[in-house]
Length: 59
Image 1 (cartoon, rainbow, N blue to C red):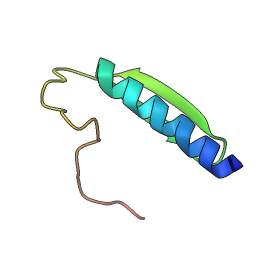
Image 2 (cartoon, rainbow, N blue to C red):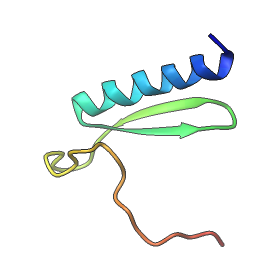
Image 3 (cartoon, rainbow, N blue to C red):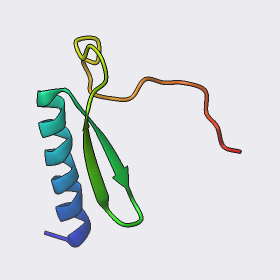
């Protein structure tokens, strides 16, 4: 298994675990540092575990 595939598998495992408990995952791709935070408020409306879409701020 390549190093990239191993990292992808690790991140997928982390995201699945966070979704099960209703947590939010913050990933720093440069350092591969992962923070798992409790979701604020009611998590019943966050069915897919993804952050809500909003306006992009590229500036």
